[in-house]
Image (cartoon, rainbow, N blue to C red):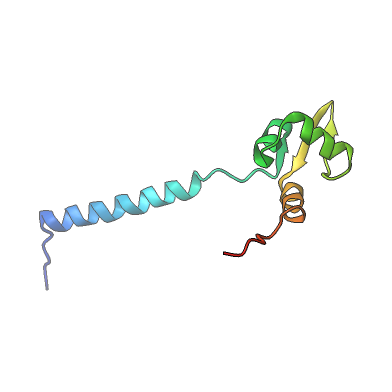
Length: 94
């Protein structure tokens, strides 16, 4: 019969490994979920525009939106599509 002894260093290493695994698991569970719907203020910040500009985009049908009880919301994917449609390539030659 073989008996293995654990040293203090072995226990310290085990403790460090377990702590690292626990912290990683906590970090994975606490990641904020990416919101699908953004409020008007969040959409303004996301696009970097003022309230009036966002309203003009909405009025002109450039950005789809949802409105319930006078509260306007925007899908993040729609805002991303809008940004892609309106992006330009750099035409400057160095």
